[in-house]
Length: 182
Image 1 (cartoon, rainbow, N blue to C red):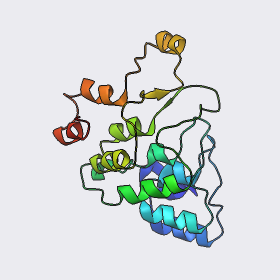
Image 2: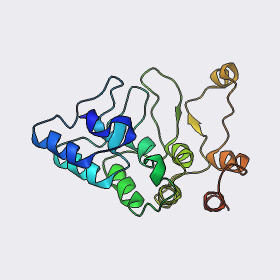
Image 3: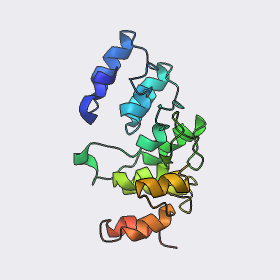
Image 4: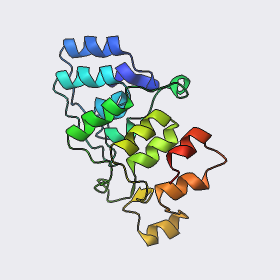
């Protein structure tokens, strides 16, 4: 199943053929990530195909990631392009019970990046805008479950997502910055 999205280049026709041939839409990879959160979260047609085949949209990988961590990911060539389906993808995952603001710890008990911070990293402005419109809280820390001890040991800072964006003003484009202005 994951072959349909190998290398981040989703092949919807291959995905459709695999599903028609009986591929398990919920079969996880080695990190316990299903096809939804491993390669299809950024493609509305793929989400619908997998959902029609019985895929659970609320899968969580061993690292704690859900489809909301990948929902803004698209092939690099598409990142600068408009993403008019972003809001619809996010609403599908929210309807399945995924939260933009609450993250259980990873299976190993480690910290995990919040979906909105992952969205900022994707560079997908339409998706970040949709997450904010759907209630993502920019005042939450970048990492959930990051203890002070772990932060110190790894040399990590854990500002709010809003502050993280402000700290990266020189790297981010003006449109992304504008989404976080108060």
